[in-house]
Length: 343
Ligand code: AQP
Image (tube, rainbow, N blue to C red; front, side):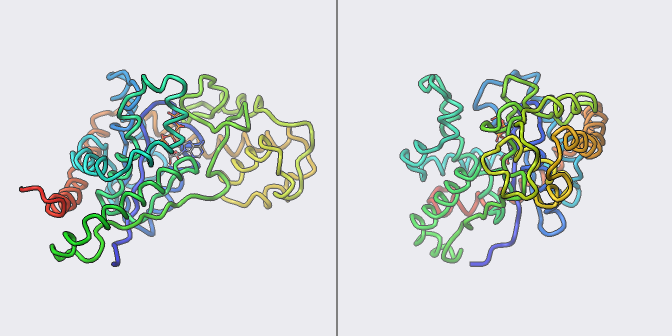
């Protein structure tokens, strides 16, 4: 069956939006706007799978929305909204909790990392997070999902859930005249030189909102001096930069900084190394500071301006949610019929 090409992706309002979120996700959301109809969601229901202060959560929902708009997402041409305003996400997640198998969820590495040693004390929501993520995407029968490398496994699970739903309910889907399959198997859009941006302090750890060290990440709202100081302090190794990307193997910190430069400058790593290969890190870092400040400065400035007008952001979210609800309600009516609920 041919599905309408549609992009869906989300970002959690869990504070400290950083360069990894920008290069792995938001910058790519912006680029997809000309080729697809897009839904970009502030996934606040995912955020509460770990404790969030209610006052802070509201601020962070508005901050992620501001980042979307400041980066160049057009909320009139596309749909920008927060998840909790569209009840279909929770409804479909429940159906998917009954489709997904315990064994599948047991394999999810993100749960293991986030729950850590205190697994017994993790929320049920954190465990069931991938079912809700599948619901986010499939509620709109989205075909393409731009995400960072860390979300690859969850995307695979989304495809497994879609496939099992299509198989389990195949006769019911056909009996309702809905074709052979109801849900598409969405394609992850992962790639580019910064699909996994690493911590500036440790090339083996991904850059993350929850890293206790602020020096590990560049926040989108950091001012120019802070960006410069974090890049200057970023961990490197004693060798000069290689002349080709191949030479970055086994040098995670160097590879990370070159990848960041390439993604910000929208060029290949080889092109970056053609310019900086053989040189010292200090020269390269100075150029990276200039590029990062030129690219991120206007976004951070615009975010600060937008969050000062919360009423305007709330209007954008309400309008987006109303438009998302129309699509979501259509899917949920079919899902309820397919599953056999009376409505
Ligand atoms: N380091 C990263 N490199 C590339 N992409 C990244 N993403 C996150 N970190 C990196 C991508 O950003 C999008 C939004 O992520 P999220 O906020 O929904 O959740 P996350 O992946 O859990 O982000 P964090 O920063 O690591 O948060 P914490 O510390 O709370 O776990 C996704 O597309 C993600 O792939």
